[in-house]
Structures are given as C-alpha cells and as structure tokens.
Length: 335
Image 1 (cartoon, rainbow, N blue to C red):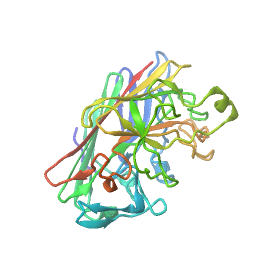
Image 2: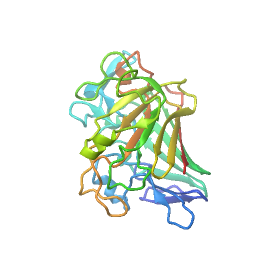
Image 3: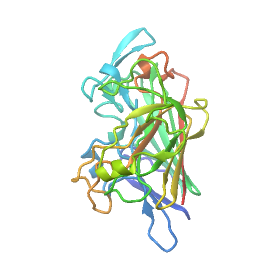
C-alpha cells in the first residue's frame, strides 16, 4: 500500500516476536514491544501514547534527528573553507539536533507501508535552520524476526552537512519508573571524546583504558552502591567506534540480567553518543501512566562525531550534490 499524506499518522508493524509503532511526527519509534507467550508485549522503547505529547517536550524521544544530530559549536561552520554558514542556535550559542525546528518536529510524508515496513520522506528547503541546499531524505523501518532495521538516506542540490540518527531511549525491563543504570553496557570503542562544559569536544581523543569510559567488556552502567544512593550517572559523550565507517557492524549492546534481555545495536557510522538520560521529570509519564524516573532509559545514538564540520580530524559530515548520505542501524533483541 502506498500513501502520500502529511496528517499525523501512526503505523503498526508486527510479527511473531515484535510489535512496533511508529509515527510520522519526527519519523519516530513510539513503541517496541517484545512478545511473551500468553502475555501482552513488553515495551522496551520509551514513548508516549499520543503524538501530541511529543511536541510538548524536547527530549527527541524515539525521533529521527537532523539535519545534524548532536552539537555544532557556536552554531556555525566553514563550508569547505569558502564561507561561514550560520545556523540556528537552540542550546545557548550552540546548535543541537538540527536547531529549534529540527526534523524531530516535522510531519514527514508516509511514502509506503507494507506488512513489515514503513517509509517516511521529508524535504528540507535551502536555508532551513540555516543549512544550505534543498535536502531530500527518507527513513525506512523494517521488521525482520527479532530485529528492527532503520535505513536513512539523503541527497542535496548544494554542498551541505548531514548527520542523522535515531534517538530512542531503551529500558529492557519495560519499566520506566525506575533507573535503567542497572543495565550492563558494552561499547566497541577504544577512544572517546572529552568535552567542555557545553558538551563540545575538546581537542584530541582520549583512550578509554583505565577510565570510567571503558565499556569494551560488558559492565553495569552504575554500581549497586550508586543505584542504592540514587546517583544520576553523568555520561553524555561520543565514543569513537572500532571498525570502518560505512560498514554495518555491531557497535554496542545492552543487557538486563533480571529479565535476561539483550539489545544489540549495529551501525554504519563512526561514533556513538551514550546518554543515560538524567533530565526526565515526574510530570512526564510513560504509556502505562507511571511517572518517569529521571534516568529511566538509555540513549545510544550512532552518528558521526559532534562538531565535525569544525574539526578536520573528525569523520566528515559534508555532502555534495550527486552524492548520497546513508546510515543504517539495526537493533536486535534477545530474551
């Protein structure tokens, strides 16, 4: 079935293992339920019941972020050293996740629906949030067995920058009224990017060896003592992933021992932003009506590095006419 419309819509995809819901407000994952024999699906992706709830908060929950996910210092960059491009700042003087009207706030076109997939499309005009060129992008979600695949692509008629990701928050327990810092995390990265007070990367890269950023071997995000004390864990950093950019490979995994559930994330990108939340408030409620714990879920955002337009030593975010930006993510669930 093919549809081209701009009204707010919800699409449900389902197979024997997973029930997933998406909406075209931000080309967003609203719900990812794991089916248990004889029970209702357990939702592991933070979301709200109504599309309107997403516009009333700014946490990018489940959304496609663009044109540029993460931060750009002072909301500007040199376009191939020819001219300075000034973007729309929305986090102090910096740009975050595409600006004040990023792709998470847009109504995407539903271009195609099948029993196992949905395709969204969005056109972003020249000058949108300050970005040059007319950009056309698509997001395709597909269910296959116990995995969800997301393919993002984009083209532009002028030199520009593109860095897009999905911003889902995960809690494998299915309960968002408690901390998700009890999950075990593994990230395939030997280095990470230290940041300044504005979360802009500092010069250079740092080795994870001997630091609290070493997740090469799976370990709990917070210790039992930290969990008992209710400590909020302060990560919000980019990890420099092992393997070649452009190659789909496993980059991270989450494991929840009490339920024996595991989520494995694969991506074609060079970096992974790890953010165990810390900002949700009790007046925000999950789909079951319970108040959110301030650290109720884990964001794992594959992307290029933050502020990469201003850093020649980082993977390039530049896209030229005739070229196609492509980012593939796969979430595989066990348990």
